Amino acid sequence: MQMKILTILGARPQFIKAAAVSRLLMQKGITEVIVHTGQHFDHNMSQVFFNEMSIPTPHYNLNIHNLPHGAMTGRMMEEVEKVILKEKPNLVMVYGDTNSTLAGALAAKKLNVEVAHVEAGLRSYNLAMPEEVNRILTDRISTHLFCPTQNAINNLNLEGFERFGCNVLYTGDVMLDAALFYGAQSAARSNIIERLKLHGGYSLATVHRQENTDDKVRLRKIVTELNAINAKQRVVVPLHPRSRKALEELNFGFNFLVIDPVGYFDMVELIKGSSIILTDSGGLQKEAYFFGKPCVTLRNETEWVELVEHGINVLADCDKIFQSWDAMFGKKFNFELNLYGGGRAAEVISNYILGL
Ligand code: UDP
Image 1 (cartoon, protein in one colour):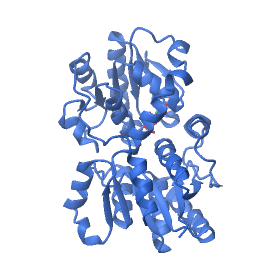
Image 2 (image 1 turned 30 degrees about the vertical axis):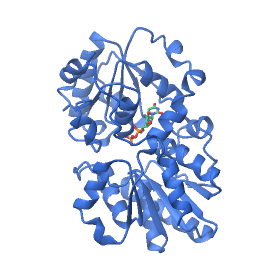
Image 3 (image 1 turned 135 degrees about the vertical axis):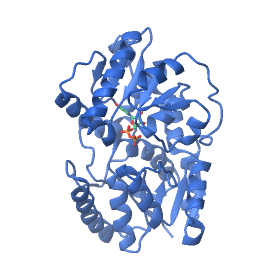
Image 4 (image 1 turned 135 degrees about the horizontal axis):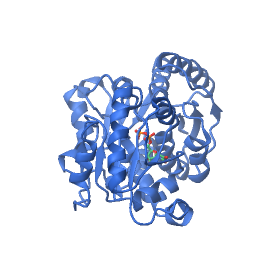
């Protein structure tokens, strides 16, 4: 049977993960139809990744963005349903934990089309995070659950997934595939360190989680702490449009360097050149590890618990960021722990799909 996959993408981390998987699907002759929901739509949050990482051009652009959660998810479901009816895929593939993930999974499942979830089984155990709701619901209705870590498998076992008649598979992390493949090219493809004159050391920070950007008290504390770090070592912050808006509305002085979001090659060069990472991003916590940098996570919990267990990543409540940075800065860690597989997750996933 000629396998036809419908892949639902919408947000930056999904483009990066899909870049790794799409390449392998193509190599193995699996037909992939890509739907871009439009959740992220600015050039440097979307198109730049398709250009730089040679991700196939989406067959459908739904252009759905800037809506509240319910409206966004609902509109996406409506439009994805139409595409599924037209394309009749064997499988709908979704990535991660965004509204696009949940909308794609729900639309498929209601049409009795099997769902494959890349990055299944992750849990923060904080249901106030929209991402946690998306993860749990997507996992529950997926037939094929591709888990990046052993902890993800353990989480699904604890929730009794053996009883649900689905296939749970350890694949390793597709983000490691992307980091290795594109990381090997980044030095030749980016001159951001020269452009921003960053020689001499800096800390790299990102903030975009709703729990940090939508709460003015938290955001003010984060800015205060980053200001304190910046007094010791320059802090560079590529800022998500939502965070930039929140920072401007806060009207609170900051002295660190804020730049527009950057493409993946620039980002990898920024990571490689940094002393330490400060972030509330899931993907960046792992990339810090992949590129041998300690990480301070600007949250009270994380899905990537193995990094915290090994002390490579510390969770910092928003008034303890400077303290945590100070404790982690310059420390030596073991970054050879093989926590995320060998960078062959896309190969495992595409071989599995071929065997269906
Ligand atoms: N990233 C990027 N440019 C930036 C900021 C982040 O390419 O300006 C990459 C980052 O390296 C990681 C991914 O985007 O691979 C993480 O995306 P995000 O933080 O939006 O989502 P999360 O990982 O929290 O789901």
